[in-house]
Structure formats: structure tokens, C-alpha cells
Image 1 (tube, chains in turn red, yellow):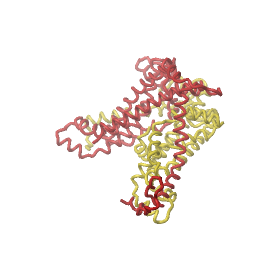
Image 2 (cartoon, each protein chain N blue to C red; image 1 turned 90 degrees about the horizontal axis):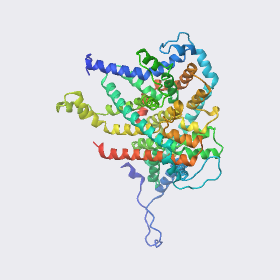
Image 3 (cartoon, chains in turn orange, yellow; image 1 turned 45 degrees about the vertical axis):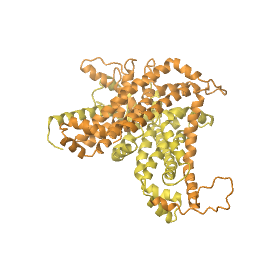
Image 4 (cartoon, rainbow over the protein chains, first blue to last red; image 1 turned 180 degrees about the vertical axis):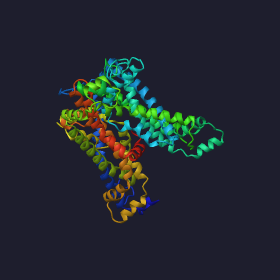
Amino acid sequence: MADMTAISIPAEVPRQKAPKPIVPRPIVNVSERHEARVAWMLAAPAMILIVLFIVAPVIAVITLGFTDFELGYSTFKFVGFENYAELFGDRTFRQSLWNTAIYTAIVAPASILLGLGVALLIESETVGRSFFRTAYFLPVASLLVAMATVWQYLLHPTIGPVNSMLAMVGLPGPNWLGSAGTVLYSLSMIGVWQTVGFNMILFLAGLTAIPRDLYSAAEIDGAKSPIDRFFLVTLPMLGPTTVFVTTISIINAVKVFETVKTLTEGGPNKASEVLLFTIYQEGFVYLRVGYASAMTVVFLAVLVVMMFAQYRLVDRKVHY
Amino acid sequence: MTQTFNLGRAIRLTLLSLGALIFLAPYIFMISTAGKAQSEIFTSSLSLIPTQFFYLENFAKAFGRVSMGQLLWNGVVVCGLIFVFQVVIAIPCAYAMAKLKFGAARLLMALVMLGLLVPIHATSLPLYVAFDSAALLNSYTALVAPFSISVFAIFLFLQFFRAMPDDLIHAARLDGMSELGIVMRVIVPNAWPAITAFAIFSVVAHWNDLYWPLIVVSNQAYATPPLGLLFFRAAEAGDDYGALMAATLIITLPLVAAFLLAQKRFVEGITMTGLKG
């Protein structure tokens, strides 16, 4: 190991001079101590900033969740679990959790399946590969707030092209973003449109990594149809990619905010109120920082649960 | 693969083309509508080519209401600063963790893993209170500072540096280079693939971010592109979709153009950094 050259012969520890109660010094020589000091210096800026911008704010948000702090008031007091008790009874918050769950339940599976489907189609096609890849990936590279505005025009109830097309075939177009019954589905559709390309790229990378001989081996073993080979080779080999894509898709869906803020502001009648939008509204519009912090803790808990679920899955299921 | 045209292939190509058409439709309508006069938008939304070309008028309106140049400049400054800070701070740290022995490496690793879990949405309340009491709202500092540290960058570079041969570093040490010198003259030149991949990830993420700018900026002078577009929408009463589409076109174009020019890098970057959305 090249590493060993850095450690020279341990310095002699004189026995007779060591009656001190201090634990015998670990055998470090000058160069190793120097190395540790340099390492500290190189890592210090990052460490300080992690504490300042991640660790301290997380501790602060958990603490604030137990207070009645409101911006603009100089005093606050600890109220125990009162904020959490209020959360349970808060109809807006419950609606918001429910809407986020529905949105995630639509967007995550749809964008994973479509991403996989498009990746498989592109992978097995020889013509226009890069064109298709670009077309499906373009929404990922586009500014979501801007594209949401375009969708608002497309889905406009009277002058929008989508309803004009529906009218041409004699179907009545709904008020996509304006009615409580359809708004969440319309937002989900925009969400799917925006994320399919991202998942597709990850699946394409996963597909390219599958050794070709596995397919020929499967064919010799009797998996004659492409569908058999898909279930025998492709799907299991995509296991790790799928776990990643699933986690990212779920976490990103839970974090939906841009489209809601741009297009609906949670409306109509709270039908598109989602978790981050509710936190934003409580914390930064009504300035109820304590209450919003309690919501944030719930949001963080959701993310932590997702991550642990992923680690367990990776550990258990996808070792080859 | 056979080039023969069979039924399966026909279905495949049809599916792919139809899908691509749906995915590209918003762009087609954006470009078309940005050139239409108000009256035309209200009457015939399905004809793609404007009867009268209203591009100049709509773009003039877009530039007139909100200073688009300022928005794009703010976007460039904020994304540029964030990226530079992230790289300058993360690379030495990742190098120390990957190649040097020191006691705090395990603690740091734990901090990094913890940090990967925590998005800006979770830390924004205390950060907002802090920036507010420091009278730093509406400033580049407020927009940039919270993102100066990217645990994801540390994580990515750490993976990359671990794979670098130790001999390279030992040779440099024997040449009498300091550790900082090694970082700058040996590590960085060998880490370009990781740095470009991270650059794409970082710029896409922060160019598009609405949440944090919305919280700390209320003054148009510091608005980033997404926030500026929100201001523009607020100022634009009613349904002047022509001007609105012109504005969205201007704001979407830089990143899309960058993507089209450097597609290969984008795809590599997303694949390499794909762990995080």
C-alpha cells in the first residue's frame, strides 16, 4: 500500500520517564501530527459552514416548534407540544398533507413508469436517439416557473389550446386549474411532464450498464421473447437504479412548491394546498414562525422516513 | 440490431414521436404565442403561425415592465457566486476526508450524511429570522450565503477523490508541495469531470430555485429569474399572454440554450449527480 510510506517507524517511548498518569500518547510522529493539522485547516471552512447553515438551523427549527414565536414580537415563550396539538386539528394542514400525498401518489409512479418506458423505447431504437432524448429531457433543463406559466396558457378554460382541441372533437373542456375537482390532477400532470426526462436519463444510464452477454445467456436458457428477457434480465439488473429513482421521485414530489405558488396559490378553496406551500404561507406570510416550525419538523420527519426506507431497501433487496 | 421495418418498430417510433410531440408542445405554443397580438390569442389559439408578427411589440412589453437584463444578470451573479463558494469550500474538505488522516473525519462524514437529508425548506425559517435581524434581506449575501456550503459537493468530490491514485499525491509531496498546493495543482486539474458535473447540477438547481429567493427578496433589484417572472406576472394584470410568453421565452432561453449546446455534458452531469434531485 502506498499509504504506508507516510507512516515512518514509531518514535521510541522512553519507559523510565513515563510515570505520568496521562494515557500513553498514541505513537504519532511529527509528520502525522502535521498531516492531521493540515487536514483540520482544509476542512475547517466547510465544517464551520455546515454547523452554521445546516446543524444550527435544524436545531433552531426543532426548538422553535415548541415556542409561540412570531416575527415582529420581541418575546416568546415555550408552549410544549401545543403547536403539534394545533396541527392535528388544523383543517388546512390536514388538507395540505392529504393533497401532498395524492400528488406524490400520482407523480412518483407515473414519472417512474414513463421514464422507464421512454428509456426502454429509446434504448432499443436506432433512429433519432439523441433527438428523443433531448425532447424528453428539455423540461428538466427549463425554468419551472416559466414553463408553469406556459401550462397556464395551454390549460386556460376559454382561450387555451387544450380546450380548443377538445372542443374540436366535441368534448367540453374542464377548467383545469380553476376548479377544485381538477386542479390537483392538472398540477400532477405538469409535475409528471417535468420529471419524466430526469428519470429517463437515470434509467438510460442503468440500461447501458447491463452487460450484453446476459441477454444472450438468457436467450440460450430459453427466454425467447423480449418480454421474458425484460423480466429475467433488465428489471432485476435495474434494481439499484430503480430504488434511487423511486426515492428521488418521491422526495421531489413531496417538495412540490413552484407550480402551486405560480399557478394556484393553494386554491381554489385549498384544493391545491400542499405541504411546502402551507409552511411558506404560515411562516413567511403570516409570520407565525413557531407554528410553521412545527410543520417543518413534520416535513423533515417525512424526508427522514423516506431516506431510511431507501437505505433498508438498498441493503436488503438490491445486492447482486 | 436489424434495420428492417417491422410492426414492432413502427409502433415504437410512433409512440416515441407522439410522446415527444406532447413534451415539446409547450415550447411550440410558447414561441408561437409570443408572436401573436392580443386579439389573435383570443380568437384562434390553435393556428401556430401568427397572422401578424407581434414579436417586437411583445418583447418590448416584456422588457418594459420588468428589467429582464437585470433579472438575468442577477441569476448569473447568484449562480456564479454560489458555485464558486461551493467548490472552493468543498474541494479542500473532500480532499482532507479522502486522502488525509485526522480524527474528525468520521464526525465530518456523519455531518455530511445528515446534511444530505436537509433541504433549504427545512432550514429556511431560522435562516430567515437570522437574516432579518441582521438586516440582510434583499441582498446578494442573503441569496448566496446559505448555499455556500454544499454537503452534496463534498459527498460527490469525496467519491471522486477516493478513486484517485495515492501515488500521485505522494509524488507531489516528495516534490515538496504543500497540501494546499497539492489540492490546487494536482487534485483540481484531475477532477474536472466531477467539477463540471457538479457545476451543471448546481447551476440548474439554483437558477430554477424559487423558494429561497421568494423568502428573502422583495425588492425587484435583487430578483432572480424565477422570482422576476413572478413579479412580472403580478404586474401584468389580465391575460396579456403575448407579453407573458415573450417574458417566459427570454427567461427560459439561457439555460435551454446551454443545455442544447452542451447536451452530452448535461447528461453525464445528471447521471453522475443523479443521486440528488
